[in-house]
Image (tube, rainbow, N blue to C red; front, side, top):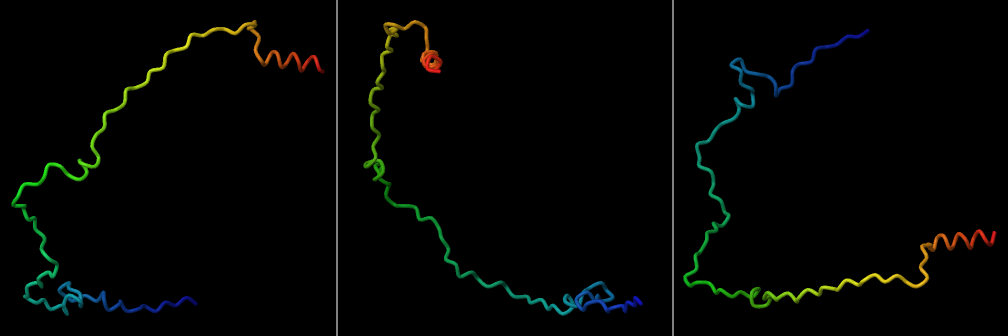
Length: 100
């Protein structure tokens, strides 16, 4: 037997005949100005004397000239004596085959 009893709507959703909710009807607005902020007001104070042109950073970290770049001369290829076109792989494999 599946009987469902209808529940009344929650109180927050009960609406007034004019379309207003109970929370809106209970609200009372006040005509007062908002409280002033306690946060301090920061403003820019312009200096009266001109600033120095040399700063600690400019004095301590001055730019250095780059040293001249060293250019290496290319070395001419000179084949070794006894180079007959064989590679070390061919030589090693010939030795391996001769042992086996």
